[in-house]
Length: 479
Image (cartoon, rainbow, N blue to C red):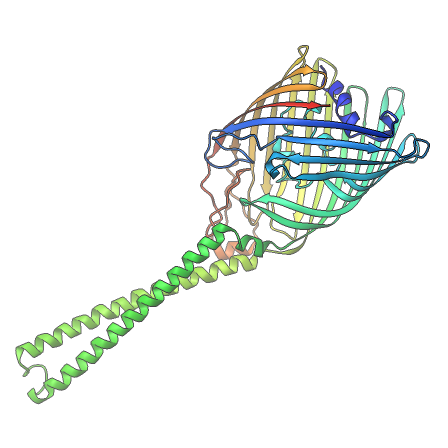
């Protein structure tokens, strides 16, 4: 079955303007995906390691549409979504009022889906695309950590014989949760505005988009509360305590040796000093002098240890103090193309992300997918990559090669299998203006790709594999 026909089954029922849906007072649609994945690494990659998991892409969704009066162009749409990776918590992914102004123009107000990329509006409806999940380098939450926002969207679509054009505008605010540095960083979107233009035919779609985001994040306190940061702070604190105790003990021993020497020197005065004193008294004096030398060296060592621990504590404090927190910006520009004539399939997309004010990397991400239909079977190949630049805290550069096959069990169900090889980027980069360069003394930041790891907080480098292999399979359907 053609992917474009799958889109008709899935996306048109679940994501496209309500003008194409059958008129009814109440309508329910559902979709689900069960995904099993495993890698060959101990470290967690996205949501998967070598033990395997069902959590990465397994989900269940229900969309409900209620039109209280079919003669009045108002309706209410809500989509409830439950993901395995979120412990099956139920979220209102959509919840908006639709006003069908005309056959071409729709207004949605409430919690609306973000139309950022080609697949964004149908991201959770797996039957609408060939992969098990759209390429993580572009579509993953580490690149765009939200799929919906609270606000409004305007949607205009016009048909001209065999072609169509579509314009979309949205504006809103919301909370965000960014997966980075082995944790989830919370923030708030103060505004998000986007404009999208697309055009195409039955077989072709071309899409352009521009998106502007304002965000507030308190990163320093969140990062300093990480278990790795707390462990390091505890280790530094213990080192300070041990060095302080050692210094106090050495000082006491040194003071004792000095007192002993003073006493021995007083005892040798009647003999005219050291040379005339009895041999036992001379031996005690020399032993005290040797002790004085030993205890003096111990004082110097303990002092150096205390200074080193104090410097490490000061450096760690400077690291967290230098992490920008507060207002930040993100700008996304993207272009995408999708072609499917029933025999050949081509999907390609590129997205550019520019970050300001917060220490996440600028990224250039994209992919190209080619496939060929053989009845119900669609083998396909994808090359996907992301390059990071100007980052203070993370470098996610990597590239993936994905070989997959999709089998349409029914028009409403598809079985998919994929093999993925991912290689981390070898670029070592750091924002030259970063205060962490001065603090850490190392102007490099090695890539951790999309591994869910915490970098070493003294070097911000991590020991993760240079590459990985991943196997996945899924069953996805609409109902």
